[in-house]
Every structure is written in C-alpha cells, then in structure tokens.
Amino acid sequence: MAHAPEPDLASGDPGDERPRWDNKAQYLLSCIGFAVGLGNIWRFPYLCQTYGGGAFLIPYVIALIFEGIPLFHVELAIGQRLRKGSIGVWTAVSPYLSGLGLGCVMLSSLVSLYYNTILAWVLWYFLNSFQHPLPWSSCPPDLNRTGFVEECQGSSAVSYFWYRQTLNITADINDSGSIQWRLLICLAACWAVVYMCVIRGVETTGKAIYFTASFPYLVLTIFLIRGLTLPGATKGLSYLFTPNMQILQNPRVWLDAATQIFFSLSLAFGGHIAFASYNSPRNILSLINEFDFPEQSISRDDYPAVLVHLTATQPRRVARLPLKACHLEDFLDKTASGPGLAFIVFTEAVLHMPGAPGWAVLFFGMLFTLGLSSMFGNMEAIITPLLDNGVLPRWVPKEALTGLVCLACFLCATCFTLQSGNYWLEIFDNFAAPLNLLIFAFLEVVGVVYVYGMKRFCDDIAWMTGRRPGPYWRLTWRVVSPLLLLTIFVAYVTLLARKPLSYRAWNPQYELFPSRQEKLYPGWVRAACVLLSLLPVLWVPMAALAQLLTRWKRTWRDRDVRPDTNTR
Image 1 (cartoon, rainbow, N blue to C red):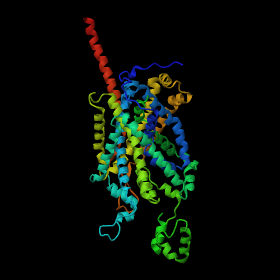
Image 2 (image 1 turned 120 degrees about the horizontal axis):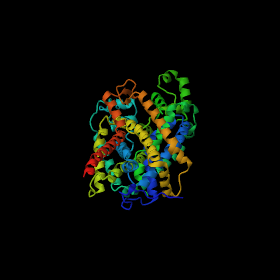
Image 3 (image 1 turned 90 degrees about the horizontal axis):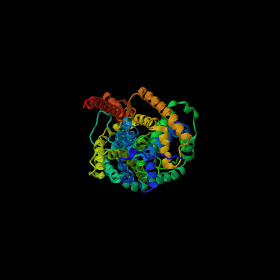
Image 4 (image 1 turned 30 degrees about the horizontal axis):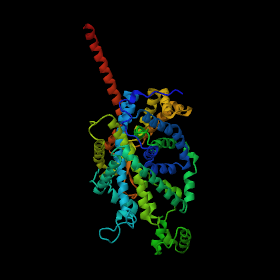
C-alpha cells in the first residue's frame, strides 16, 4: 500500500513543538465530553417524546449514519493530519476557505457566551441545593406574612423560583431590567473555573477531563437505576420507545432529527478539529385541602377509590374542585425543552425523591461537569486558531491569551444577567448556531472532497491509520452527505421563513397565566436575529473576496513590473 508523504502544509508548525495529549484516553474523553453536552440532556429527550418516542430514533439513526458519522470522521482526520486549528486547516486546504475557519471561531465564541451563562444558572441551583428543604419546594410568604406570594400561588413553587427568584425576568424583551448580581457573580465564577481548566490548553484540560467527562455518566447511571424503580417506569419507557410510524410522514421530524445530529456530536464548531490537532400531581392535593384530610393520607394508589366514594357521597363539593384527568401523553406533550426542562421539570421531579437535597446536588453537579466538558471544546476552538496564527507576539504567554479571551467572553456575556437575559439567551440558542452549522458542515465536506481531493484525503488517512477508507466513507463523503446537508439547509430556510419570529414571555398579568404569553419580536430584535444568523457565515464570502482581490492586485502588479524589466 502506498503511503502519502508528509505534507508541507504543516511545516509552519513543527510537530515537536505542538502540545500533545498524554494518552489516547484523554483525547477520547475530550471528544466525548465536547460532543455530549447539555443539549443531549434536555433537547434530545424532548424531541423523542414530541415525535412519538421510538419513531424519532429512525430518522435520527439514518441522519447519524449518513451525515453525522462521516462529518465527524472528516473533522478528526483533517485536524490530526494537518495539526492546526480551524483557521489553519481550511486555509491550508484552500486560501479561499479561510473564512470557514474564521466563521467557526466566531460561532464558537457566540455559543460560549450563552453556554457558560447556562452553567452560571446551574451553579446557582447547585449552591442552593445544600439546604433542607429545597428553596423551590414551597412558595415564600407575602410581605404581610398572611399568605403566600400571589405569583407563586398562581403558578408553582418551582416555576416561581426559576422565573422570579433566579432570573427575576421581565414581562417583555423591550424591558431590559437591571443586572442580577447573584447571576453575575456565578457567571464570573464559571469563567474563572473555565480559565483554570483551559489555561494551558490540552495540558490542563487533559487532566480535568478525567473527572468532568466521567462523573456525568456515573450520575446518569444512578438516576437511571432510581428511575427504573419508580411506579409507572415501564409504562413511561413503553410510551417513549414505541414508534408511532404515522409521525414519520411529518417532514419536520426528519428535519429536527438531522439538525439534532450537529448538537449531539458538536459538529462544525471547530472543537473536534482543535482537539484532533493535538492528537497524536395536583388532584390529590385538591381533595386533601377541600375535605380537610391529613397530609399524605391519600396515596396515589388510593386516589381513584377515594374519589369514587366522595363523588357518590358529596357530589356537589367534588364537582366544584378543579380536578383534571392525568394522562401520561398529555403530561409529556406539555413538558418544556431547553433550560425549562432542567430548571423546572427535573427540579420538580427531584422534590419527590427521598433525600431531595442530595439528589439535587448530584443532578446539578452532573449538569455542571457535563457543560464544563463542552466548554473545553468551545474554548479550544477559539484559542487554538488564535495561537496558530500568532494573534499575539510569541513572547506573550499562552496563559495571557487564554485570560484575555475568557475576560472578553465574560464581559460580553453580562447581557445575559439582565432581567431580560433569558429572552436573549433563547435568541442566541435559536439563531446563532443552526443555520451556520449547516453551511459550515456542507463547506467542510465539499472542501475536503472536491478541493483538498478525495484521493489525497484517503492517502492521508491511510498514512495515519494504515488502511484506506472503504466504499461507505467514500460514497457518503462524495455524494450522500453533501446532498443531505443541502436538502436540510433548503428545508430549514423554508421553515424559518414561514415561521413568525416570536417568543414566550413570563407575564404574571397575562390572563392565561401561568401559561407563557406568546409575543412577536419587535423589529429591532428581528434585525438582531437575522444579524446573529449571518454573522459567522459572512466570514466565508468576505475572506474569499479578500483573497481574490489580493490575487488580482498581485497579478496587475506583476503585469506593470514586467515591461520595465524587459526595457532594462
């Protein structure tokens, strides 16, 4: 088998000087920690139950096979072969693709801003978990101490703690409110932790990743065992994984499955390239309150019999109660996704476990370490290209550059600690990444296969691994993945154009409160959404145009100089 020679592309960065992982376990854990982030805890389960459980896994697995895994392989292989960050890699592939690397850096920066803000919220809940009872277990008394706060009574203790005592959220995005100092302090602490972990790149993250990447799976295993012992666990799993094949007729299912792959594997952010470059119940309570039963005198199993008895003996009083039928499907369909799932639904579940504070500490500790592992990848996607391109003089230590990046990100992220910060975080989450990831992923595959060259890329893989990629890899890289990504991009843009830009506000004055009020974004916010969607990807045409102008300028300069030379 012919082996590809060592390329000259990496000659500017001597391999001996570049830091390396201490062992393969560090590299593997770092990739897993970066890929499996907070979105896998709340977004993936939400999509599964929304689209019929097991039915969603069908398009998800298909997208994983033909889109996710091939692109994952491309990023790891090209990063390890060229031993550069995203900017260096794509500039080496083609100077006209240098904007792809710049876009990845910009995208990772935007994601890091709001991602670490979520970790600040997690840290706030984690610190509040060391008390009994938990602060979100009951409503606080009102100012007169004659009852409970009306907003809390109208919603729930869990929702009140999240929206009012944590976010202190405004009722409209136009009302920015003031900075919430407790969140600002937590945000500063989170950035300090991130800085200490990435201060020297893979030399420090490689040590921290042993804990941050393994601890979440230990906690998830504990929660799994606990969940399987709860009443109704079998029914819940049956509902979640029994496929409803009719849902597959909805194109949105396939679109959401395909886009979820990017968040499940953290593709097209540039983090994997950077890592690889260093490789070598309310009804029961209503009955108890109405008929003055002692608390916990009616269990879940006794409730149907007690309700039948009271309906027969005192039908008028029962008829006045706001009793609702409890169906598993209705409950799951009304659950939240995103942060609401972690800070409302999961915290509600923790309250019903014996020894609730201990479970809360485990849960939020797990979330923090899970998010921290992903932040390692986000920061490497930013810092590695900056180091490779010599943004600062060589005599400036890497610790200083890392500190400047973390400080700049912290200052920019302070906007999320405003009372309207949650609304802006949702905007960043919804508009900063999805569209850009699709475009970047398409350009990555096309750039490697049709610009860098399929034969050359396969030779590189053979040189690194000792064997050439099989027909599956070559077919997906050359045809299937680009076509699939292009189709997803067109479908996503079409759906985005038809969907009104709106948000759901927490408004205690809303007539349907505690339901969140649906509001349209004002014009200036819609403009910000469009700008946020285009900001990373604009680097691609801008860099290509700059390169083209530079080449034209050089060509015309050569033409002007040539006649003078001949005359002499």
